Amino acid sequence: MVKMKFVAIVGQQEHRVTVDDHDKEDGIYSVELDGRVYRVDAKTMPSQVISALIENKSYDIDLDDRDQSNDPLDGRLAVRVRGRVVRLEMLEHRRKKMKDAATAHFVHSGTVQITSPMPGKILRYLVKVGQAVKKGEGLVVVEAMKMENELQAPKDGVVKAISSAPGTAVDGGTLLLVIE
Image (cartoon, rainbow, N blue to C red; front, side, top):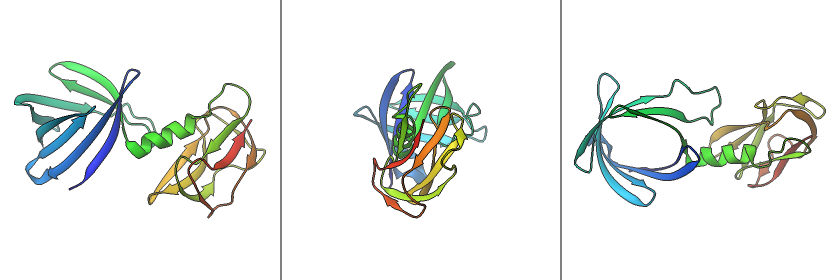
């Protein structure tokens, strides 16, 4: 039994989602959405459409993730249910923290401090002091919970300082580098 925690973002509104796959082989899930629990009986059909029974109502759900960028933190989806398309971003809770950390100190001008979003280990820096970087360019790779996470530049700028060496264990909030 695995509980997976997500944040679903629709427009500007965030929703907390927890999925408990306690009977995954039979397609039975417990889904908590903003504190309300639903029993979901879901099967993926050969057409890749998901047939779901939620609160005794039947739904055919078509997921389209073709709009995703190369950003590993991007969880954009288009979900079609009963002829209505909803565009949303669905991020595993830890990925949401990583994405927030990558943009937490965003400013249009001035200094940006890139910090570790959670405890982990610096695997490698992808830039050097004095190097010009573009918005979205990879800066540093941090391993957290046995997964590699690349933090990206929130703006164009120049790397002014690097605070730690590869292999260093860091706490959440530890300064990793500065962009000006």
